[in-house]
Structure formats: C-alpha cells, structure tokens
Length: 471
Image (cartoon, rainbow, N blue to C red; front, side):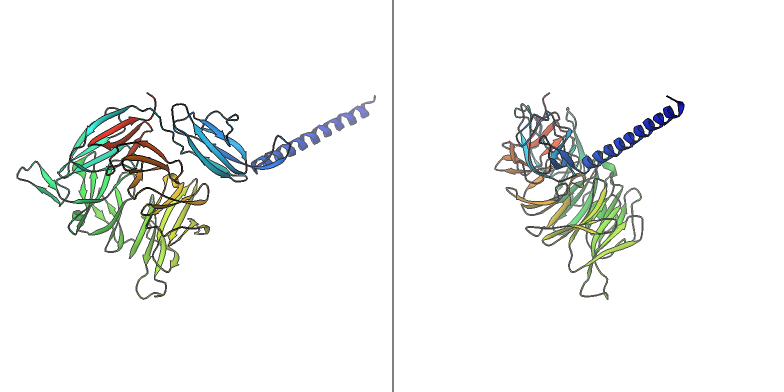
C-alpha cells in the first residue's frame, strides 16, 4: 500500500472518530436535557414526564414508602425521580408513629418535603419545675427560651435548650408602670394584662404589650441583662399602636405612633422622623417593609388607600398599587425569590417583589383577620378564629381546615398544636397528620418542642418535659 492511500485511510479514520465523538456529545447533551426537562423512560420503554421528590424527616433515617411501595428507598434524607401526578408518601420508623400525605408531583419540578416529624411512642417523662402561681408563659420563636409571668414583679426565665434546666429570676418592677410595690419594697404586684409577647430571633429579648384599665404600654425585656430593658412608651413618651422587632437582636424596632411609622433605635434611645404617614398595616423582611396606608387628604377620594414599599435607611417610598380599602400585606422569601402577598377580603394575591408582577391568585373560603409568613417563607398562614387557610408555596394551593378551638399555637416551625379537653393535638401547618401526643395538658400555657429532643408542656402546675428521642 502506497503512502498516499495510507494517509487517506488515516484521515478517514480520524474524521469518522471525530464524527462519532460529536454525535456522542450531541446525544449525551440531548439525553441530559431530556432528563432535566423531566422526561424518563419507564420499565415498559414508554416515555414519561417526571418530577423529583426530596424528602427528609425528624428523626432522620425513617423508612419511606411511595404509593405503598418501599422497595426503592429505605431511608429519608434523599431524592427520587417520580412520574408526574399524585403519590401517597408514608414515613415510618420502629418505635415511632407514622406520617403520611398525598402530593402532586409536577412535570420537571422538584417537590421538597422537609417537615415530617415522627413522635416516639414510649417517652420518658419528668416534672422539672413547679409553676404554682404562674399566670402566663411565652415561648421564643426559636423554641429555646421561655418566660413565665405571675402577678408579682419576679418573673422566671428558662433556657429550655439544656438537659439541666436552670431558672433565672427577673425583677421587672422598674420597667412597668402597672407594677405596684407593697410595703415590702422587694416585692410588688403586677396589675397589668399581657396582650402580646414577641421574641427576637436569637431569643435575647421579648417585646411585651400590656394593658391596665385603658393604658397600654410596650416594654422590651432583655432576658439576659434585665437592667438593659426599656419601657418604650415612657422612654419615647409615645402611645404606640403597633411595635415590631426589625433585626435579630432587637437593636432596631418599627413602631406606629399617631398613625405614622417610625424607626426606633434602642442603643441610641432615638426615634426617627416619620417614615410613612397614615399606616394601617405593615410587615417586614429584614429591613424591607411593605405596608398599606391611607393617602393624604386632597388626593383622589374614590381610591384613598395604597400598598407601598420602602427600605429602612432609604427615604424613598415606592407606591405599588392603589386599592379601594385597607388590606393585609406580607413580604417573604421562598428559595431565592422574594414575594409580596396581598390578603384582600376573600383572596390572596402573590406578586414578585422586584417588579410587583402578579404571579398567583387564590380564592379563600373566608375573610382572614390575621396573616403571617411561615417558616422559610414556605407558606402563608391565615385565620379567623379557628378557621384556617394556608397557601402552600411549594404545592401552589390553598388548604382550608379547622382546629378544635381558637387557642392554637406553634409547637415548632411547621407544626401547630391545640389543647382540647386536656388532649395535646398536633397538626402539620396545612392541617394534615392530626395526632394526639399527650394527655392531661393545661390549655392556658404554651407547648414547645426544643432542639428536636424535648417536648415541654404544663400539667397540674408543673412544667413537664418528655424526651422525643431515644437516649
């Protein structure tokens, strides 16, 4: 074979190899794009559109069954490609109760479930504190701290996130006008009624709204350094109608005084000039604030309200929408996107925060009187009494349900509880997985799960702790 023929054959082999490599890359990219778009070939070699389920649980390592079949997956904290459509998910573990829910897998989308909680069936139970004479208790938003009040000036602070529970006595006599000292100057009587109590994120402060006769006071209690507490009403000579904690450690608050929104600087003991006039309702995510307000007199009388946005520290107010009547407005973040949700009568309308484009509108079965953003922005919780509606941002649907009575609370970030005739009943935030987990529980004190280890509740003037895990 001459050299020219040999060169031609080598060139041909190179060309064929390169063509095969290019085709392989094209096929690989096409298949990957096919899979990313949610397509899959089943065992019958039929093309199906798929979605993905990602599921975790507390405790971890629970068994998962999909539509009754657990052969494909042994434990939680994993992901699985599933055909689009409805699937029933069951989570279970030896020694614990079970959790179940039917979900709708969307084509090409991820469905994330992180909140299933299983309760140990046989739990160690201990009485850890006598609460005789206690009037009220409030649990921090991170469920690690508790403040127990009574009708004296000596209240009790507890760090729940400790196996050896130690109580700390707080002398609150200097900070409430409605504490009357008796002849013994070391004691006193607290005559006020606690209307609201909200903690900051790191559980170092609790903001308390009290009322005695017609006088309302707002007091910020520093539970770690009681001498740094402050009576906001007296310090700023202001009758605040609403106060909210703006940052994680309560150094900055937002308050409505005479209908106008102000920033309150706690370390500097300063109150800002008016941020927004005639505010009716407001909510915030970090330093971003959304609100509904009444337009100034002289403007269009037919439409005298508006929804607005501002960033604290920036004097610019953005008017987002003119509305016929006041409504609740919320700001939240879910995954990496921020949203503004408007609860207007029997609808909840969700907008993208950046451009206020409407992306979702859901009818509600009733007109809510309260609304709040759930943990990590995963849901919007609305209620009127014990009538509840939840917008599930993951599933993009509204679930309506009722609790046994109006005295419900949050046992952790994603689970509600209610005490009915001594039974402690828990629900997922959307009303699923109703379970009775304890009996002989006091209905006028809070219940909490701390660090996924302990269940705290009150029973017969005792604070009870149960272990939720094997130890």
